[in-house]
Amino acid sequence: MFGVLLVAAIQLTGVTGLDLRARAFFDANNVKIGDPLVLTIDFLGSAEFKDLHPPALAKVVDRKTWKIDDVSAKTDTYRDARRLTYRVRPMREGVLWFPALEFAYASPDGRPCVVRANEIPVHAKPGAQVVVAEMGEDLNAMPKPPELIGSGDALVAALSDDMAFAWRKALAAPTADKFAAFDFPAAKMNEATMAIREGNWARAMNVYTSLEWRIGQTPEIEKGIVAALALKYDNPSAELPVWRVVGRPVLRYAWLGRVGLVLGTLLGLTFLFWLLGRGIRALACVAVAVLLTGIAEAETTVEETVTTNANGAVIHRKVVKSVGRGFEPLSLFEEFDNFDPFGRRQPRARRQPVNIGVSLTADKPSVTVGENFNLVLTLEVPRTVTIDGGVRLSIAEQDRMTQVGAGQNLPNLASKNPTNRIQRLVFPMRANVAFTNLHYSVAGDYAFSGDSFFFFRESRPFESGRRVAPFTVTPLPEAGRPADFSGIIAESAVLHEYCDLLKVETNDVVTVTYRLRTNGYVPASFQPKDVAFEWGRQSAPNGMTEIEYRRYVVADGAATTPVLTLSYYDPQSRRYKSVAAGATRLKYDIIKGN
Image 1 (cartoon, one colour):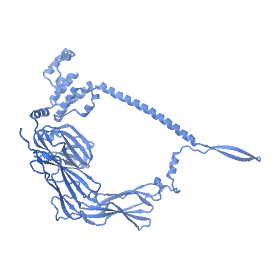
Image 2 (cartoon, rainbow, N blue to C red; image 1 turned 180 degrees about the vertical axis):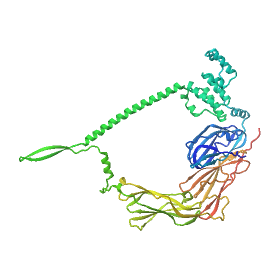
Image 3 (cartoon, rainbow, N blue to C red; image 1 turned 120 degrees about the vertical axis):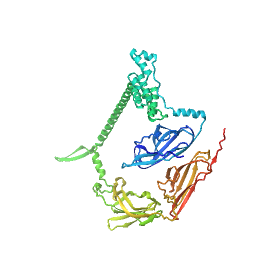
Image 4 (cartoon, rainbow, N blue to C red; image 1 turned 90 degrees about the horizontal axis):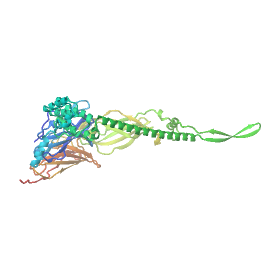
């Protein structure tokens, strides 16, 4: 049994991205009818999700099979994925397939895009008869609004005779419009109740919001809000929004209480800021006093003996003069800017930018997919400067190649210009797919050789701009290529299978995890046949890549799990090979009749 094919994709409002991928799964796949499940939908890829709101799903699935609580939906971030979660219940017995939902979003240039999630099987088993009956009634019944407030003695006593007569008349044939003619809270509660019964959830929500300002949030108002939300989303599982639950301590007050809380909070914050301001001023005064004391101490006196000759007599006197100076931050920084540890006062700001030549070449003009080659980056650098912190080589085709070894520095070469030198770096690479030309750019920083003391070293950036290097990668040979080959390039590959349960009942869903371990290249878009989704991939410290795939297998009586085979190309032997996993034996339980 397969999921329903959707006619239109579900809109992801506010999402902009490129090449999104989606995966969907339940927290359990073998349950009883009516058991609550958590549906998780992850979106992976480069996208802007800040305005993402969980879309409604209840109207796009078979309501006789699935009961989805759209009000319970929430969004979160999980590792590198944006996650949506919903509460879902299976409504009938058997192997049920949750459909493969499609979601629409926009690319950065405004083009419409669609991402498709996988379908999910669930084995819904029957429960006890009494439990199933109660569950069915509870799930299918919509939450009810508060009952109408009648003409009790206390209420009638507070009304005039004419008003009491009009109230009893409204209760005899109740409508929302009739209760709208009254202005007291009980009448407004009845107006909202009748609005829900008449199918007007928006009017009921407006009435409840107005009542909250008048009398505060009450259990009856909360009950009415839940009924209005259930009517809005056509969802019997609707619940009170989380913010209303959290905000009960404030919402239970009417408008006067809320205003008082706000004013009290503002007064408290004002008092705290006043105290903080006085503390800052006190600290500032202490700092100024310390600074003035330091300046005063900096002005010292020196006694000198001055000898003068007048009328043949020698007169000795003491002259007191100040040799200290005040605080001069500008002149201090100027001195550091012109300071040179070796006594050369050469302002660096006056040095002119230098020109650094950049080129990228391959040691082979053409290679075949899977063949190794070397990329050589050449820099022509003036002898008066050094490369500071290395260079950054960016290649547009980087995802089509794999670096198979560490980069190395080659011996410098002499340049035709005697004031320059040529530095070279080599990167061992392997081509993974066929393409033509390399589009690259180089960036980095340089410093003048004379600035050897690191504290006074000044780095300047350089950028080569986008350039093209001629290079060709031809496709793999056709001879011996398997029909299922999907572009995996590796010297070795190992595939293992893991099952979440081996002792099963007929129609149980077995979640199978495949772990592929390889030292080569696996395309980012590759997904084996019949696999539901890729769970994740990571690089191991020894250069290996580990990828996990998830698959759902229904135990339909087969003695073993199915076999998964993956083909790959070994560049060392220049042959196509394959690796397989599966055929795990399943043990079936025999269910005896009552």
